[in-house]
Length: 330
Image (cartoon, rainbow, N blue to C red; front, side, top):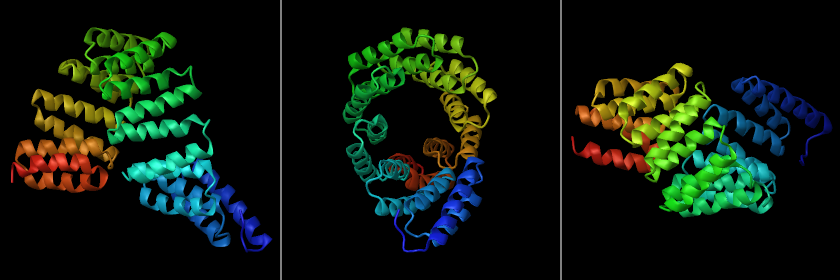
């Protein structure tokens, strides 16, 4: 850090940073923001202060404000791996994928043996639909962390999306072989087996996952979506209901339940579940899309248009799909 202020200003700024960190640790992000901003006024060239301010904004889902502070931090210290990594993550949240890719690549260049940079890049490529590139990035992660079952599942998922079923199966098999008693790994493998058409093995892994951990909500989500992919809708409803009971504040559980009801033709109940998901996570693009499609089925162009407008900022690709459905009822 370099600054033209006197030592008393810098010392006070450091004290404020520590105070802000304590507030962040207590999830008092608004109060932390005020403290970090005060520190920046005292030490305007303090890169860490901008980074911490960005973190507090990010935790409040204020990604635009976080991005402004992160750009300041990176400008002050362009060689910081941590700053570049979080810049990429924030840009990804804002769907600025080209810039996010550049930030992740810069982070990898700074620390090529830190696997998290490759992992972030792989997740970005998956979201982007560049599945072969995602698989390549996840292979780099596995080069650094060769014993990770979680990263094997990431590779399997990317290979399945890229149409390489054989490689996806091998990676999923290896993940289960290494972690046969992990509910999360079994649930993830179940989803991959379903995606590549191995339905009997998918059901076997679903049952195994629920047997291993009947209280892990994310296991139930994986299993529920697997059942949906196999068109076992009533089984999916049962699983998503159990997920909601375990943790009623998980938006994905309500959204999954809404999809299942929608598949049964229960539009009214599906609408309620999608709305609940959005109460919990107003930036949940898939829930806005699903709610918009329900409005289209109901012939409610006004409601569908509102969902389209919200989606346009969150996920332009999904917004375009919804626009096509909206045009059919106008």
